[in-house]
Length: 156
Image (cartoon, rainbow, N blue to C red; front, side, top):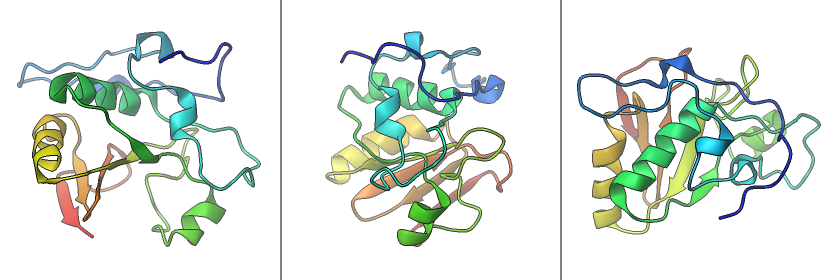
């Protein structure tokens, strides 16, 4: 998958992306050059261009998702990444949603979950990397927002 040339909006690295104790380590200083399976456009707000801010996503979060893609060996379809406040309200997102850009970037991604086998594979790979996971009927939410309570798994 070809990446667009030039630099996308502001992107913050996440030095907390390193995970120890389980043998899975995400890069300390991720960059789009190191991301194999995703492009910045996949994480942009789905508000149809009403945003007046640059699209931002934590590269640490993307690096973890890239690692999951490697581990499960199946495509990972992003259905929601960064959201502007307007779009977050439209989809009934939480006021403190990790999809909203805080301190320059958002730290949440929702991915399509087509079936139970995919859900199992994705969750097995995600649990060592993300400390916040939401499970919906046909999607999985992962985030690593340091401002929200860690060690959480919930259902929608």
